[in-house]
Amino acid sequence: MAFSIKATGSRELTAVRRNLRMVGDGDLSRQMSRGLQRAAKPLKPAVQKAAVQLMPSGYGPLLSKSVRLRTSVRERRGSASVQIKVTGAGKRENRDVVRINRGVLRHPIPAGRRHPWVDQRVRRGFVDRPVDGLGPDVAREMRAVVDWIADQITKG
Image (cartoon, rainbow, N blue to C red; front, side, top):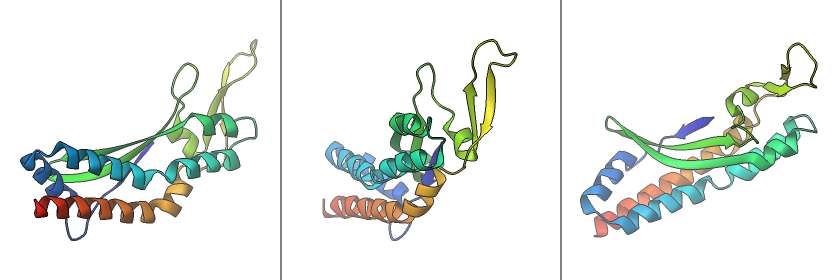
């Protein structure tokens, strides 16, 4: 499951990334990455809490412990966005976070049955709800990080 927050405003993220490459300042680039990750940090506990609240009692805590967030800056054809990817690691494979977020939990049933896996309807939005609530604040914080980096580049 991934969602993107596009940093817009007085300075575009694309221009800042281009200028960072031209300047070749690795330290500023690292500071920007750390700042963007710090801005997204409140999302993880919110998603974990929502997983416990919205999932069946036996699965919520398990899903909550497996939630991982990864922040990256994506550039394509002159535009850039900050992407936060939400994943969940299972014992054998990653959990289908997209499908669970949509309200469908696929799980095994006891052996001896004809179909060993079943789909179970669950409450939807364990990722969407926290993102909708915190997304504007995270986006604002990310824009502030990008603007600060742009000011540092301008100051030279």
